[in-house]
Image (cartoon, rainbow, N blue to C red; front, side, top):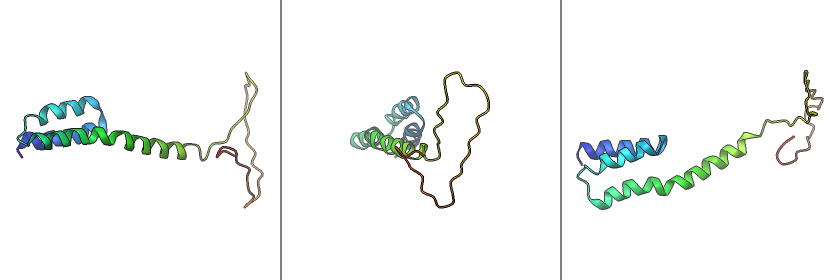
Length: 102
């Protein structure tokens, strides 16, 4: 394992985190290394295979937590002025939630 292999692996991992152009640069640098072809292919293809499940997991978790504290305001079209939100629920009172929103 020479310096091209180490630099290529580091740039592959960094490219997986940052974006496709850096990933492609990592692939090009990695091909100048001395590892066997099956090791090179496993290092190159594993981030591509893992991208979709990791992306799907992160997006579903962020979608779930994105609207926990939101409150919907229904205002007439063209409304201008102050909006005052008055919350007169008692401590421990259950709120009716529809589609995970209050």
